[in-house]
Image (cartoon, rainbow, N blue to C red; front, side):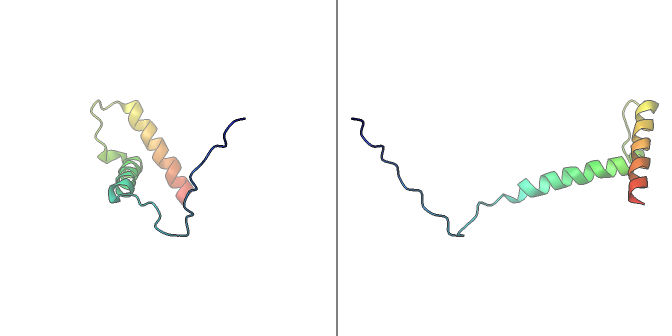
Length: 71
């Protein structure tokens, strides 16, 4: 006959301390999102190294599409 398995009861969480994120875990993604959003909304400031006009056209069309949705 097998022996019963003994398990340790987990302490009940009663609304105590919740796990917290460090400050940089919230700030860094927010900064990255803001930087990318600014590049999309203002591609003139992006200064692409190659200066490929097709890439510029794509970014400008994306900007126009975003601005049309906002207005």
